[in-house]
Image (cartoon, rainbow, N blue to C red; front, side, top):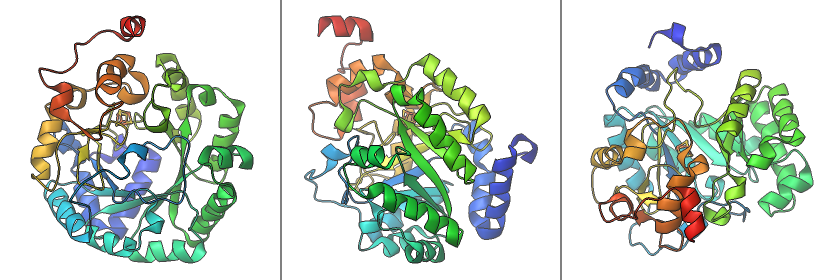
Length: 364
Ligand code: SF4
């Protein structure tokens, strides 16, 4: 990619990667041409295990816990997934859960991915992340930590996470990462209401003031928020968010990455692999487009691309904004169904008759 197309922050990141992980850098340099050929350049969000020490209000994987499956991710499965992903030119993993820092085999998982071949992010609530652990993560090849914080007020964050003391521990984790020079960003859930609040602006300003970017995950009516449509953003809210992107170091899945305007990144720029090997087009769309224990990753990605919502360019966050998608597919096919649901059952010829959200709401 012509480096002149990358913004200053992106170029800086790319240069440091060139020194630290040259093999990964070379793969990322090919992303633009791959994307233009219609290939996925996805980050693999690996939901390795759903074990967690928290019980968050908005947890999107709640209904995946306890799914009856005879296959589960383990270091060998991760190694094979990483081998296939490398062959496909993919370059990035996010290890998530649950809470990765409670996994007894966490170090083995990192090794199985192979830090020389992949950029590795770890999603965490920060509870177990002190200076010693941060140093260790850096040593074993973790590149960046994504810390979840949802309010600058201790009481607000603790209530949202339903865990007393979580704010204090998470802020300790921020300090620990900065002390040892482990790259971090803050991820925060933003409802329509929070987007327009003073608290949210203060939140961004506080973390940006510490040199830390803020990743915004727009609230979605799934998991613990099933059926709650008032939290969803609309086009005007997204426009408002775009003004914030210009002013602050704040971004969402819709923010162009690698100098590429991808729109919704489901399958194209991200997919999830569940603890049971199912591939979801995005962490919040609980539809399986295939299972890595049954077929090659390449075929699964192709199936994903054959579904118009993931193959075509879409300017909005489908699951946080598109109410037609929600009523026709999510409410009818995902709510009250065993997860994950199969993509053929959702998008196949027999799938729900499509009606606009407004009419659907009148009918129901
Ligand atoms: S639907 Fe939304 S959350 Fe899912 S990948 Fe697309 S932009 Fe991201």
